[in-house]
Length: 278
Image 1: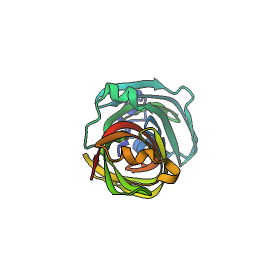
Image 2 (image 1 turned 180 degrees about the vertical axis):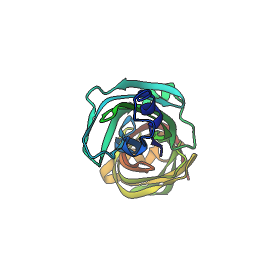
Image 3 (image 1 turned 30 degrees about the vertical axis):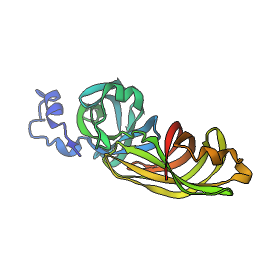
Image 4 (image 1 turned 180 degrees about the horizontal axis):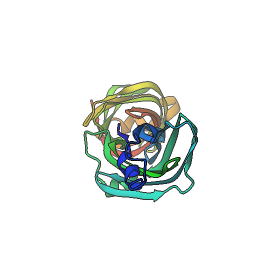
C-alpha cells in the first residue's frame, strides 16, 4: 500500500511566485492509496475484478479529478493501457473510491504468461497517474502498485480403473476411480457432485455425492465414484461384459470446486476404455 504526495510537482509549478517560498503544501495535496483488488466474478474461463483506490481530499473545498491513466502488466508483460477522461469528483475533506474494472480471459492470458504449477496467482503490475485540479493549480499524482492476481486453472480428470467389489446374477457393486490433477498451490475440494455413468454404452444410472474429496495443491490425487447395478433394470448383457478385463466407461458430472477464489462450478465429461480390477 503506497501513499503518494506530490509536493515536488506542485512546488515546481509554483516556482517564481512571490510569497510561496514558505508555504507548506503537503497538508493541501490529494493523496492516493491503493486499497484492494476486488474479485467480482470468477470461473474457469475468466475473471471480472476491480482495482480499487482510495483518493483523499484534505482541502475544505471540492476538488475534481481531471485525468487518470493506467498500464496493467502480468509478469512484466503489458496487458492493457488506457485513460479515463471522465475523471472523478472529490468532495471537500473526504475520501472517494475509484475502481478500475478489468475483465481477463484466462486462455488469452495464459497464452501470454505461463501460470506456474503450485501457485494460485500470477504477478501483476499497475502504474499510472491521477491528475487533479486543485485550488493551487493542476497536480499529477503517480502510482505504482504490484501484487498477485487470481489465476484459476481447471482441474484435469482421467478415468483410471473400475474396481469390481461384487458380481452376481442379480447385480454388481463397483467403484470408478478418477484421477484428478490440481495445478494450484492450495488444496481444492470437490463437492455437490451430480453424475451419470454408462458402461459399454449402457446407462447404469448415477447419483449425488455431497463431498467427493480433497486434492492437495500441486499434486494428482484420486477419488472414488460408487456404482450399483441392478441387472433387472440395466440388462443382463452387462453381466458378461463385467467378466472381461476392460470396458468402455462414460462419466459425466457437474460439481462445485472449492478453490482459493471460492466455489467455482465445473462440468466433467470423460469417455475411456479402462481396466477392471477384481
